[in-house]
Amino acid sequence: MGFSNAYAVGFQGQSLAIIDTGTPGKERRVLDYITTLGRMPADVSYIVLTHPDGDHSGSAAALKRLTGAKLAIGELDAPRLSGDMKLKESRGFAGLMIGVFGMMMKVERIKPDLLLKDGSTIGPLSIVGTPGHTDGSISVYEPGEVIFVGDLLRTDGSGKLKLASANMSRDMEQVKRSVEKISKLEFRKLMPGHGKPIEDGASKAVRDFVANGFR
Image (cartoon, rainbow, N blue to C red; front, side, top):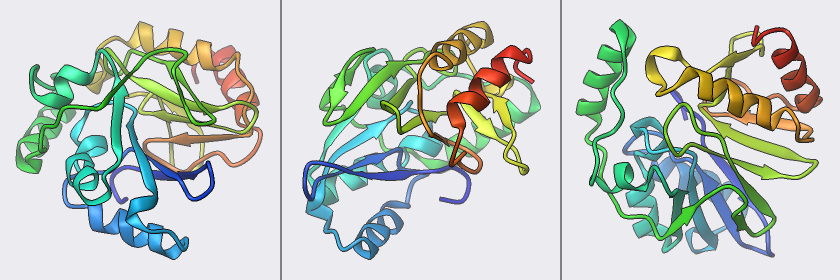
C-alpha cells in the first residue's frame, strides 16, 4: 500500500478478511485488488485492524461502508479507533513528523463491531494479543501457516527482522515480551505491517531474532 501493508485473506468459501487498510483514501486500491482475485466487495466479511494508527486504519471506515463488512480491533485499542481516546503520542523527531502526518491524514473515526482479545477467533484465524506498540495491538494467526503482526515487527530492505520503532511504541519492553510470545508459535510466513513479508521459515527467523537479543 506504499507506506504500509494491507492483506486479503480468503476463507469460508468466497468470504474474505482484510487485515489493515492503509492510509485514508486507499479503499479503492484495496477493492480493485480484490477484483483481480475474482471477488466482489460484498465478499469481504471482516476488516481486522492490528492497531488503530492512521497508516493501518485510515481506510477502514470507507471500506466498511463499501463492503458491509464487520470491523474488528483489539478491545484496548477500540476507544482510540472510535475517537473516544486520542491516538498514542510518538516521541522524537520521527514521532513529531508522524504526528504532523497524522493530522494531515484526517483519519475518520469509527466504532468497531467486534472487540478482539487473546484467543478470539475469526473463521480459521486466531487472535494473539501482542501489545507494546499500542495498548491493544494484536497479531492474526493461522496455526502452522502465517502470522500477521502489524507493527510488532517489521523488515528492512534486506528482509531482516526489526522491532517496532521505539519512538512510535507505547512500551518497548512489552513489545519484546510480545515478540517472545509469538516466537513460541509455528508459522511458515510472517506478514509485517511495514516491509517485505518473510515467505518461508518465518517462525525460525523470529526465534533466532529473539535468541540474538532482538538483533
